Image 1 (cartoon, rainbow, N blue to C red):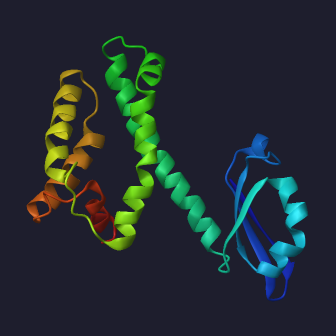
Image 2 (image 1 turned 90 degrees about the vertical axis):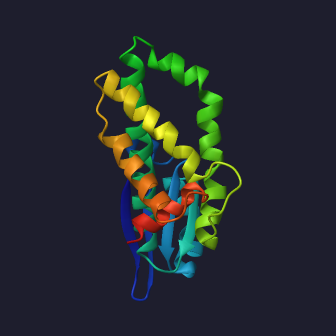
Image 3 (image 1 turned 180 degrees about the vertical axis):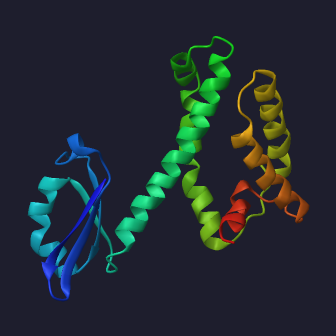
Length: 186
């Protein structure tokens, strides 16, 4: 990830590249831009040489950096969850690559649920008929128990259990997982 500012005076453009160095210039390279629409339009052909999937997301030059941080925040959470799962699986001699192949549909479904979760957060509406926090709690407790039995660190799922327990204790047992946004907003 890299960023830069171009332009002069009140006419500027800030870009946040969402790739590692070898990806710069690729047709699928994502770049978030913030700043002057006029500068973005003026240099759009040249900007496509840096990355083919550039998008002007705001007139505020700080927003592309915030987008970059949000991508990294999501990435680290997913990677930590995956690596915890990999430790759990490998403790039983299960090849992690095989798990990825076998669970691909289930894991992909998690990514497709992000727009739904984002909508709940944006609306501040968390009530759900399916997948309420009260249904997550036993699964997280199972994960902690199975991790402990295999001598796998329980801090990561323990943190999750703490979040779920707090929300349930606060009267949100029937709300969706997206309710936990309120914890992070404090």
